[in-house]
Length: 591
Ligand SMILES: [Zn+2]
Image (cartoon, rainbow, N blue to C red):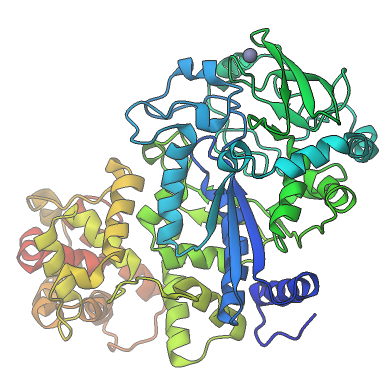
């Protein structure tokens, strides 16, 4: 392996991939690959399938090589089940189970021509926003145009050899052998290549029953009537519930019958385009066809009979090709996605994440962890801490104190070989923006006033300066924070509470109000709210905090929250005070 000047995982894979590509095809573009099945909303976790090769491809481009990132849309896969909770879809879609995804109608009201295109579109938009450059290949287009003709005929001619390879694993895998390809997941939004587990929709079992027994049982092409690695879609009902009953190598005549509708016919495979190779043969065929040097897959594919392992034998022994470098990537979890925002089939998608965080942040989550490390994407309060960490990293990059691996991850997040990704001109802290959005409920004028007062030495001319980060924080508050947890500023002072205060509390409020004018900025108010309890305790403004002082500060803050928002807690006080506004603060604190 070549010595890398950088120390992150992306660089190390790039070294290996360049070396391997030079060995195989000197001077040719480097080919990396991903595969996605648009069988439903594409889960955010499956973004790793694309981001892993994207980051490696981008590093290789930065080094001046030409790279082709093949994104295979597995849209010629069979429609396996009706995902639950997708708008415009009901149980009647079950009648399409067994057809290619491109032959299933799109959800009602969709502008897209079919099921696959509908779910591809959302992913395509997200990938564009993320700066992912790729060469999208529709497997429907490939198969139905006859692009794989030679490969299909070749596989059929060598069906005995393929069967023998598969058989080495069948014995080890008895009773489990459904051959789920690159992933075990079969839920909506996941095809054979994807491993992301999903929550099972409540009434999925009911819909699944409509699929019928044995529907997917022939995935590796095995069957009582002999082994055939190719499966036609039925000429009458369009489904893949077909059984090949005979094949003539000389004439390429293939005979099949359909178990769904009883149709049967004999076709000539040298000119027939309505079918596909079974997954365990399809995948290695494409490695050879495209010359793929790097393609990751889900971590559950290290097992002996997995399609990656079997594919390694098939690509070498049948297609005279080489298995790609194929790291297994670990599970990506989601923390705290509120039910209300999971409107697209109960599945968090990359588009959902991009509504609450900027593209560079999402890229960073993937860049900073090695593929075999699992991590979570935060839709809950954790996103505020994540953004703090991201901003701290940005400051370290700016002042040159950053560690090399962290610098590499940052660079991969904010730019690609093609240039910088759009960012926020003035990236104010996400938690501050979220607090302001919480209090203002998105009112623009009020938001501009408050954000302008954060730092009076650098007034804000327009909200555009803090966008798109502001929009993300506003959307996070409105979509992920339940209404009952939002901050509601009191309309009238709490007379009862004000009347019950002891002398010390009244003096604290008086000191606070007295200092408001000269401390009306984020830093100033921070000094003020921490300073008032010090003055009351007779301490100097720069006094070290003692346990007693900390207790006094906590009590003072709780009092302010009660008087301002009728709760014991809320957004950070300096932000809250700015958000409430000086006049209203004076009214509510009893001046
Ligand atoms: Zn049929």
